[in-house]
Length: 448
DNA sequence: CGCATACGCGCC
DNA sequence: AAACGGCGCGTTTGCG
Image 1 (cartoon, rainbow, N blue to C red):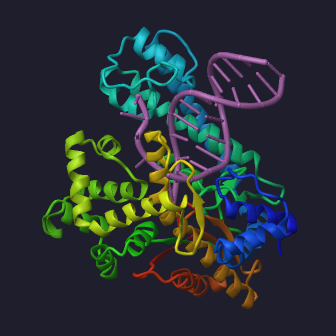
Image 2 (cartoon, rainbow, N blue to C red):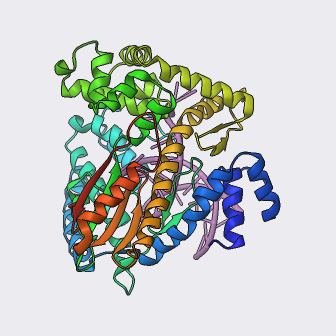
Image 3 (cartoon, rainbow, N blue to C red):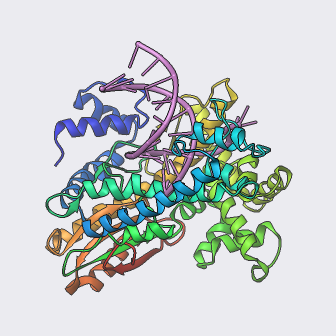
């Protein structure tokens, strides 16, 4: 059970996850307030039981193969040095490639690359982020190797080398899951952050191969399928989206079919990608500008698609408006479980701040309920594992990555145990639609 | 020299 | 220019 110190920290965070208020360190007072604000379920049924589970996860850690990391570090170093040479040659002089300021000077002053369409940063320098560099990729030969350099340097300096140093004498890496670190109810992971290990790039995959299951064990990765969109459909009670999930349709395809007013069979991959961006954008409160930027459309087209989206899924629009109005009246938003986030700026006369608060308002009940669900699943699952006397001996919960749980399971019970966990996760909460979990099994984190 | 900030970027 | 929600972290740069 949690210490009073820990309980106080949790209670204060639940009362005010942005930590903007000055709350007393008096547990009695805090718990009284929790009751008054309808936060008992969050406090007593979710966060308090979760605390010891996170402690166990930290203690057990995840096994990492130092030899693989060492090998990757050497390989990356070779690539990075070669890219540096090439880039300095094209620039005509060496400079600090990791300095956006210096890089900007080289690109746009020394080499005089056309800066049309490249935004300036607040320091006045032209942006050199991946979006900007991609835009000028065809304007000079130096750009492509810079993009390559960025990717490789990032993976080496942020992941490979620090992770190597964090392997303990037990051969494992022990992240800290922070229970009071987010404003929406999610967990975060620190020192190292194991919630943002690369997965998409080729080198990211190689890195994940360094995370390995203990001898005689395998990894089981279970991730909720489209959990935030399912939560959105359910919370907003959008019949069209609910039906799609009930029928286990490809949700992005269905969205494209609606937005483009064509049958599902006629949806192209490009249309589906656009619909996918829209679906995620809706959860984040994306406007026409951001949608245009990420989709490659112009502003007018982007606006048109957003409008079409909300006419097809009118209940979602209505829910968003209702949620923002409630926030204006009460000063907070909440998940179906009562988890709250106070939005001080929702009535701000500063439109930028008010609009920012509105986006937080429509995001938090979705992201927060998804977080509630996976936390409930963690608690229910661990209870079962303890009953079966598997906990820590034959099964360890290693990581929680927002919509995914990574377990290490002894091979003799692997299949039956993984299926059991899957059922627990799917049954953790009842929405208007089924909750689906994907299961993957492998000996390392790249192969799950 | 340490610290805060800006920038950039990995993940969900 | 930016305004797409939630995080943690490495490097550079400017300041005290």
